[in-house]
Image (cartoon, rainbow, N blue to C red; front, top):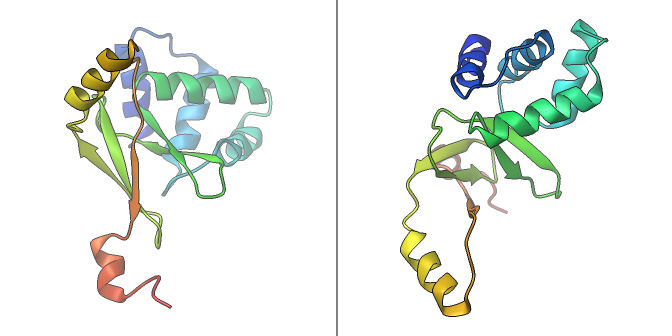
Length: 146
């Protein structure tokens, strides 16, 4: 996703577009695959050293909250991000061989979650599902086979 598109989604969600947020959006747009906060922070530090680390983290959190970014829990336990083309609720298929992330619209879990919540007197605020495996390309190449 291009930087201008990230900024437009931020503005459409009713948030101000500051110089710092533009710099972070530019750094995100420069990423070619999933990334972590340190990747963005390194680019921001080079092009705008006056933009602080806390601003980078707050902007990433904001972009995640409005659906521009999706958080992926990497196998090493660290959070990584992907730019999401969908702002509506969706999940991710994560290839454990090449790292490609695919967005999956709709999840079909709502009725099951509603039933479980009612049974236990629980109010569901949201859920997160990541599905790990191998994409079609990696399976065709035999990646990950020992």
